[in-house]
Amino acid sequence: MDDDIMKEEPIFSVEHADDPIVARKRRLRREKMQRYRKRLVDSATTLRAMVSELEEELGRRSASLSSRVGGVTAASMLPWKEIAEALRDVSMDSTTTHATLKRQVHGSAHVLRCLWTWTEERRGISMMTTSSTWRDVTLLMDPFSRHIGFDWITLRMFNNVDCIFDRCAFPSIVSDECINDFVIDTTHPEFMQYVWRRQFTTPLSLDTVSSIFNLHLCHKIVACCEENQSAAVAALRPLDQAALQDVPGAMYSYHRGPTELVNILTREFCTPTRRVVVTQNIIDDERLGGRSPRQANRQQWLVLQEAPRGGTIVRYVYINSQDFTAEGYVPFEEEAKGWGVDGDAVDNGRVSFELFAQHARTCAPQYVMDLHGLVASHVTSDDAASHLWD
Image (tube, rainbow, N blue to C red; front, side):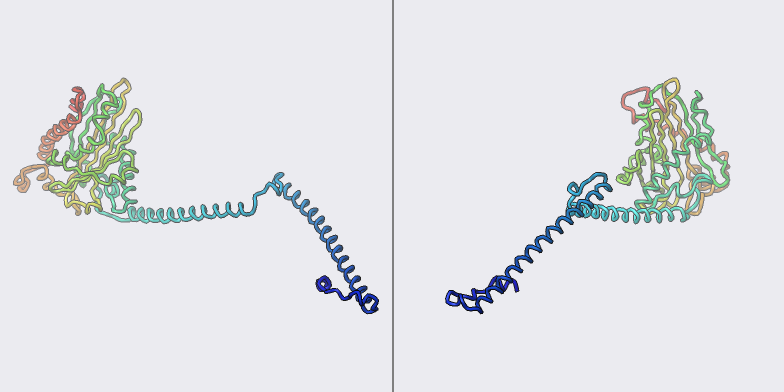
């Protein structure tokens, strides 16, 4: 209605100036305009009062907020858009972290399943002692399981190095006694094992001796157990090189001999004053098609340690088990034939254990000579070092 008042056309003219009707309309119009202007004034006054009240309320709330957040004023706080962007970034980070954790959970579950399989399955016979199981000589196909196997097998050998030397009746490491012998261990009722022991002190430094008995040489020594040692060493093929990058100081190779697939795992553990190299042939490797029909368990420990009065103490033990198949250890007669004992004599029962042991001790020096040649081939200039193993 007020807008209509503002828009009305004039309702009078000069010729109607004295008309009472026109005069009445002018009066009514004037009164309406006065009321309209009064309402505008009252509305403005009310709005100004509300502004004052709201400003007072804002001041009270700002003071209360400032006291809660340690003196931060409303003006110094971040705009809501920046807060929203920050929350969005945090949400994205949380989503990414959640996805990563889910992948890790699935990966850990897979590793646990592999470990369960590794610990629950049973494969074959004990290969070394009553406390050793197939897990110490087996590698599975699964990458997680293989990595666990590499680490488990080598760490177990390293952690038992002192126990092995004690069990093999080595002299004290600080003793000046030297040993170099080959024995046939018959203490186990189910099988024989062949043990070569060597301990001596050399005036050469630990670094020099370590450079000779490097990881590659120690790896090749176990390959020398083959009848054709040079061919076995030349035939070694590396395996799992990428996977072994996460197993420091380890290498794994294999070669297919005339009667046996030989898989050799070697690892070194070094400190400034001591170096330990362990080697184990892997009896069963799923990646290479399982096990050979006939095998022997081979283990090697080499310890190089600084001598108290200078030089280096060398301790070495190589253990080779009696041959075995999936059914168990081969009979004594078959073992004797494998060492080259006359087959007719064996078949006719003319070979006793004493004769077999004598024959084995006769064959052992040839292996030692081959080992001397292998060590000498790794020495290029130092004449004393070339005779280190003599």
